[in-house]
Image (cartoon, rainbow, N blue to C red; front, side, top):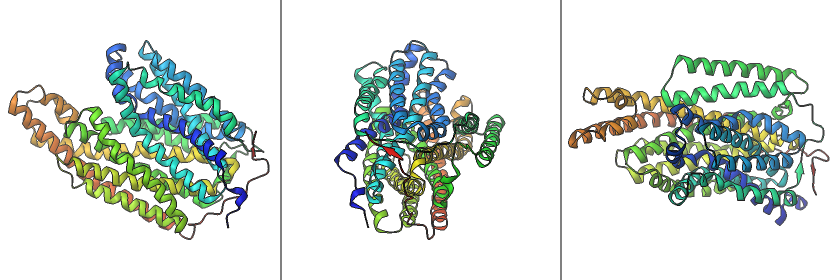
Length: 512
């Protein structure tokens, strides 16, 4: 039975609404640069390498520091870390908006990533403490998952609208009012929470965690962009080696940064793996649908972003429905069903032709709904199985798994699609074209626009058919991955669908 004293009131739900602010902004910042980059290029004139780092410095800092910041929040207080991250995020947004050189913008984006790494685990950890009632916590995490997924689509649209009427720095300045509001309201509405008996912070573990995460994320991203290379293979191998050293230290060090208590309940470790598989499926489809809307259907970036909002609306509904279903039936069944729905979306994607706008949007919506349902329910299960005093570390591990899964999905599915495209392009494109036309669809589009009349149209048609064929083959791989996720869920969570919430220790949370 639900303990009435554990139920959240208006104060807790208001605090939760405040915590959604940093979540939306951090997820929006992943995509807000899509529209700003042409204007940035025109004003700051970055090299191709600098352009790459303007995009990637944010994601790398975020992914590399999630584990460290989650652990730090458990030790010093999650609200305190949240406020520090909000201040850093706001200041870095101003610095990015008024950057005068590519180097300044890269540095500002890196600080934004550091701020994001403090905000994401802090918000989920605080949600774990705000809602002690299982049904309310499940509902809150469902909303949290939907907001995070929706923020990425909203960032693209907001960036396009701002760039239509203002200069490129406005895409960063939009963060500042929200962060100021968070800094004002959070001390009054959000209770502080921390581990009452924290171990000493281990700086070497922090260095090892970054040394494990960053090379793997970087290597997989570069494979997704350029295809497999020996250098990137070595990069990933180095990261995995450092990761093995990190795991050994966590097992042997009494002051481990990741507490062994987190894995006392097997649901937590299974949850990280399932969440990672879900992220593979999500980013694998995003890789193709984004390019399909622009390069195959010829939509402008803003038009593509606006069409992309349609699946995001369905995502918000799916997260809430999945959270409710998880209260009425075994959560393992809800998660497996989510994987099955996403696999159906990939099957629809495999049916899309070069002119299938409606079917592609439906496929993207079905995939996103299934994946977000998985993430919402599995995140709730994993957090419920972890000690409340370790909520920040638990949230950080879940989110790090998502970062790995996203990068892996883009690398694996992108490489499959790229290999099929290059084979078809080599067989179908006429000889004498620039090499770029045979490498990527974007290269072929650029070449086709320089050719006269029917010659250009023929190149475009062949290249688009090759890309769609690659998408079909990758979609079959997506079906296999997601069905594997369903099987893993039913096996790993068999007889563990209901997770007892571990009792809170005394003085875990202090309220002012």
